Image 1 (cartoon, rainbow, N blue to C red):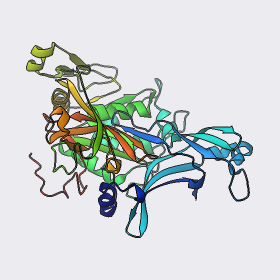
Image 2: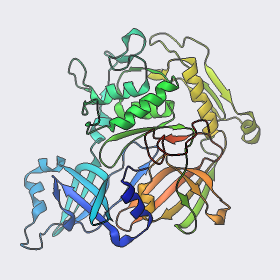
Image 3: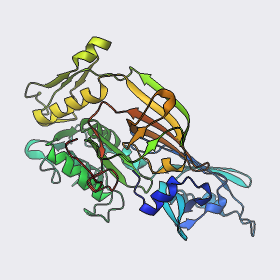
Image 4: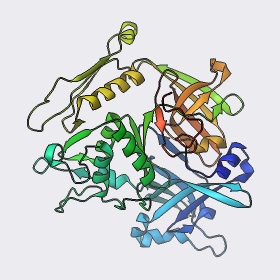
Length: 419
């Protein structure tokens, strides 16, 4: 769930649009009065970043007719200045705001007294940077593990790649995000990263890599895939990392009282019921052991054999146990057709994020407290509505887990880690 105060959470559930506010700041100044309408901002479990966000603005200052945005035409470098889009809720006598997007202006289009700015997430350029070359690979294996990845924990690999620059400067300098290894980090939610690290360590999930020009975005996507994790950038511009583990208590139910336009989609696309995962690769050599495998024979009998082969020589599982865990989770999540519930909801939906689990009790399709995992949220900041796409997870024993979250973590009571 989006990190908000208990007061914010209580007020937003009341669905009171009169308590809703939006704010757009640019260069640290509140420019909300120039916004004609606010954008729809989408978070997707399969995408690290929010896509481009467009805002229509008024160019003329009402009091003195000064065209304040024309400064970008005379000083183009102002486009790289940071802008933030926030949603606010009145809690008691004051407004509390939560950021839904942080980025800079990528494109601006003027039409007389109006303009439209297109903004890109602050991490776009960083994710396009490459790591290593064919002649000078960046390695994470054997005795050559990087300083921040001595135990092959994938979280250490991520930290090293996104925060570091190579020892010798070169054209494909990687990461270079804020290096502070504590909660003051402005680019990474350190507490969430630490929880993710500890979870991966407790399950002995280990990866190795040999990067010869892959982009940082590609590497993070592969790490998310191989560790059954979700990696994305929150609206405040910081990376967060979650992984699927047994579900704690669930708090939010969506039914015909707080949803509209419900749909259901069921698809065989993406079925995987036979997997082979190679592990223990030695760059320049070969896979050094028998692969990990898994099958879901009932699924194969019902739908045919849908194989998946994991043999990426850029990044791979280091041990048989790590590879086997991956195979098991693929079978658990992908062996059967995927069923999606799509619906619109009001302000309560604004605290949802990819990976959250909810109860679905929409009666039209026969649901009654069915566990679903949120995969996509389209936040319409103008109307106060959210379109949710959630995946039926009722047959799973895994979900995204936030170790210290009061709703989705160990601070939630009762919590049974063996459920």
